Length: 150
Ligand code: FES
Image 1 (cartoon, rainbow, N blue to C red):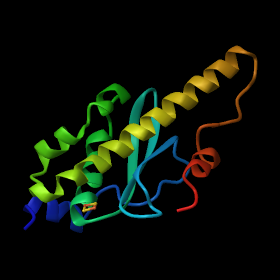
Image 2 (tube, rainbow, N blue to C red):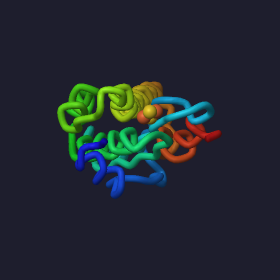
Image 3 (cartoon, rainbow, N blue to C red):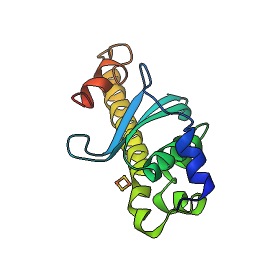
Image 4 (cartoon, rainbow, N blue to C red):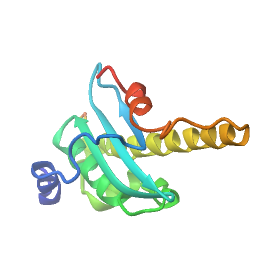
């Protein structure tokens, strides 16, 4: 039996859906063979100004993904990095046999942050070398390419 907070997040998940032209996307799990969470971020000045998710998984995983994007919104990337499985479990009393689902949200969030950092460094290096990066080279089509096929 799920706690009412989990049921509420599952029934009305804030932030559910795909984001158009995200600045970063991250994923945990594998859509080809099972459960996964994918998180999209819009980032400005190192702050997460918007976040959305897609999830294939149990009600606990959907609640975890919804909570993860709720917690991430408005946070500096450094603070968002601190959103871990333990933080999720402090907010959501998942049944013991569902504890493993709690890593899908933070895992996808961390993957998205790493994605953004790597691509930002690449853009900065290119700019230093005099190469003008394509407009939003780490957003839209490249982000989509990274996680297409699901
Ligand atoms: Fe697989 Fe929850 S996502 S059991």
